[in-house]
Image 1 (cartoon, rainbow, N blue to C red):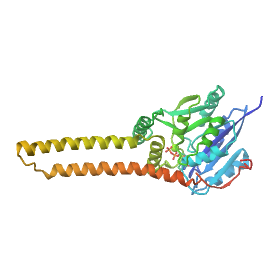
Image 2 (spheres, helix red, strand yellow):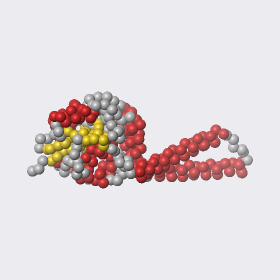
Image 3 (tube, helix red, strand yellow):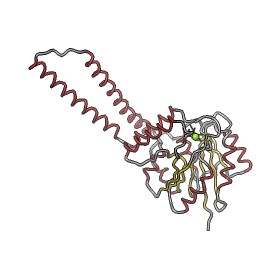
Image 4 (cartoon, rainbow, N blue to C red):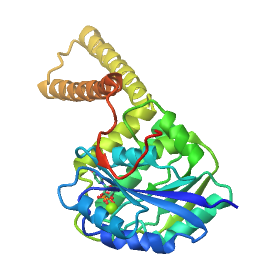
Length: 313
Ligand code: UDP
Ligand code: MG
């Protein structure tokens, strides 16, 4: 029987202290019956992440480094790793040890049992900041409502993908990435594995609120036209209410003779309408922005150097 090859892709942004702990733990748990490669994608780190990987590579040449030319973001670092991986399956995981390496054999087992995608679902954890838990839960609710997909709250980019799935991801032409959604959309046989996240090994989350918000917007707008529909419905509702109000005013004027005074109500209507209009313009703007980004057809990332030799790609 030929040995299965497993690729492990780890995006890393300023993770010089976690990697020396993480890499040996991964090597330890890979079943001896499998061949493997570990690809760390250095997403433009400003610390010695790249050096940490190269040091590990001294002892184990199956560890590889891809250095991106700047910070492109988690999703793009993941994509760079997926593009370069050659395994029969690819496991993506974070560098900060929040995705426990001891789960790898279970993921691999699921794959060997015939599942094409084995994804993990984070168990609610009191250590996760309350705001992050709340925003994550609300977001997945909203995302599923908007897109009709079924993303589980707490699904992260810790999963195993069969090489067929990776090939399909590479075929998707879009530039803006929301891998969670794309993979859920793809179908195939999927298996969920629950896990309890560990604490971040070192430093703070590299995902700032700004980065998270931007990912959330990309997700919602690249998977659904519903936000645009909402604008239509809201516009119709407001227009209808306006008609009712006009009818009422006319009635009062013609048959009651009373003059309707009140600048306050006028102001409220103006403010609310103004707000709704701005919001809707913002939503439309988001889509135009997406079209603009896609139309430019820029590469998703730029590799500055790598230890991988993939001249065949
Ligand atoms: N990461 C990255 N580029 C970024 C931000 C984060 O490659 O711009 C990596 C980071 O090093 C980690 C993973 O993505 O391996 C998840 O980031 P983090 O742990 O900070 O996010 P959280 O777990 O808080 O959602
Ligand atoms: Mg983390």
